[in-house]
Length: 97
Image (cartoon, rainbow, N blue to C red; front, side, top):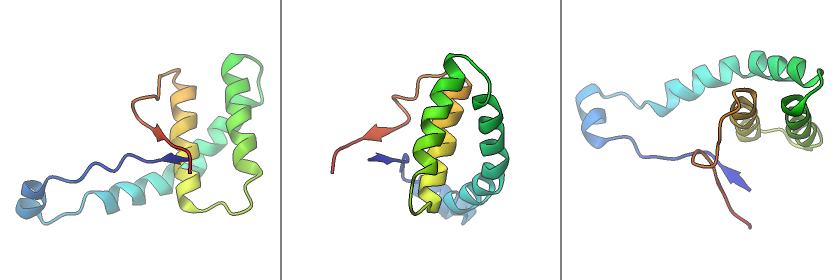
């Protein structure tokens, strides 16, 4: 199972600004997720190493029975790292349940 990073927000920042950064971040992230997913599907329809990796992730997402918001967020972040050809090993922590 993969989880999103959950770094705590600095208490000093929250005290000064009185803003919880997580909520606005996820709101904007979720707003752009359908557009990013469409872009990933377009890239996956082509041939090549990146397209194959994107097809694998999108295929795993498509067979999910319940596609909750966390699954969509993980798909978006995992596919972004593949799309940009970046290593995501430091971004995600995987564990077995």
